[in-house]
Length: 140
Image 1 (cartoon, rainbow, N blue to C red):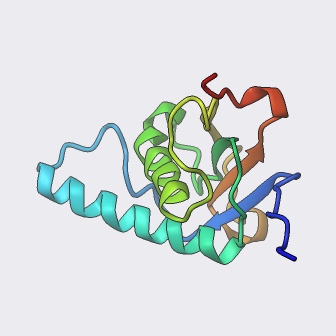
Image 2 (cartoon, rainbow, N blue to C red):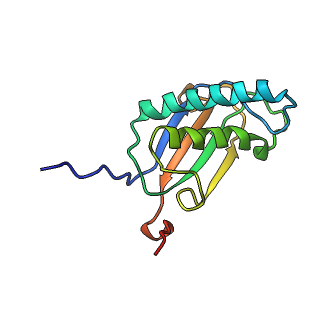
């Protein structure tokens, strides 16, 4: 008898290894340098996702949380390239099949109140929430 597939029924919070944002919309980098940083970001996020042991899901909502160390003004939308790399890592790790709106109907970024000591000592956390059954659309 085969084992039934694991089903994600609760939110998973994945601690990410960065102290500073690896990719930002304000960066003005040569395309090759930006590509190298993007690939490193996907790989590092992938390692963190693999360590969290998230099973394959039909759909999920993804939020990137950040607890900055200083009170400097920050724009949450600036975190979008890092969030995109994290979602690409979810695909690479087999958590989701693709990163279209069908499997990821919502993604976002959230900057929390600055603190010298973030929760669990982690500055960045990827939150993966399973979608309700009717949030996943199929053809047919």
